[in-house]
Figure (cartoon, rainbow, N blue to C red):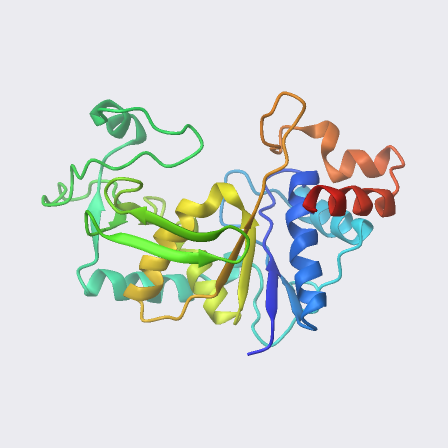
Length: 276
């Protein structure tokens, strides 16, 4: 299969240089392989996704120098490219997991999980679920999410194209994770697995903060009988204090840099230097 990479921003704020760096690596790898670049609008967060961020996403990506061959604005053979329009794909995958007995309803809130934990966890990652609802049925009418049941002690291994061999242990590094939210929407983990296969993505390029997500997603690929793409996890950009860039870093957003008259060609050169 020819190379197919993807840009997959979520319009919950303005894109920043950290996004641009990861996306730039994606685009360069697609160009080097003579492949195709796909833009996917990951707009499933109804509370935070806003129309102004969607329009800014297109404008800022084009200003920076990104060129995609498939996407919401240009179409393509695997449309629609807005996740909000792909619910029937996600629901079919969720039904497959549920019918196979691989997902179960969970009524625990995030606060419930935090209180049940015996050890701290990384603040930017999902806490390891203690299994409270694994073997019990919720009260009728209870507001429940659905979790994928992992096999405690199973090692999930893969070779990353940037970082080499990776290995994580289910039940230790991550636990049962949400695949269907209580608001009747798919989780990030399920949606990207379904979309990356449907859009024939051959390599997923993303930040190193998502290595654990990759381990979770590999279990979903297997459970759904799907072949996973290759993975390339790049280093994260940080601010002067060493914190990774986030959408709260408005001074480094592409929108702000563009308004200040920054030269995208100069920014390209700096990202290449950072990437080595």
